[in-house]
Image 1 (spheres, rainbow, N blue to C red):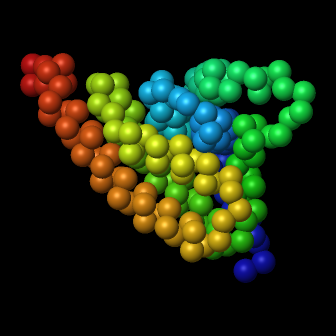
Image 2: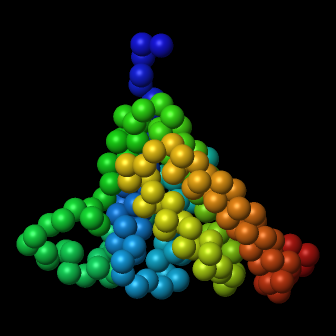
Length: 190
């Protein structure tokens, strides 16, 4: 196969979604060695949820979400905004780098990204209803960071396996939030 071009999505919206994903990776990397609170994981879930093509194709909303993510990053690492010795650790990540990885690495990183995007819908809704799980939240930060690392396929396969385990916790969290939340019950059952 001579054509090595790999495309997740097409058009300006896709580019904006990639930019948002890159900003989310920068935020996650800022959280690696710095304290963060639930507002960070709420924004990560919301941002990933916004990158699901069928959910949000409004370019302006995606731009606003990207700026919201960047603002949150500088709340976590305020000195990075004014640092004169830039290390690049918390910079937005260029998601197109994933597309240029070797086939097996690109596939595994793409699988991780698709998995957390899918889980983000459940996490976002659970968080809105006040249900959180630190294991799930921490995994989202870890998975986003992993996308920017140079790892081999064995290391990435471990993350894929972990993603499957976290996916079940995330689904349980969403289910629990739906069944236990009085407001949700009123909305559904009247």
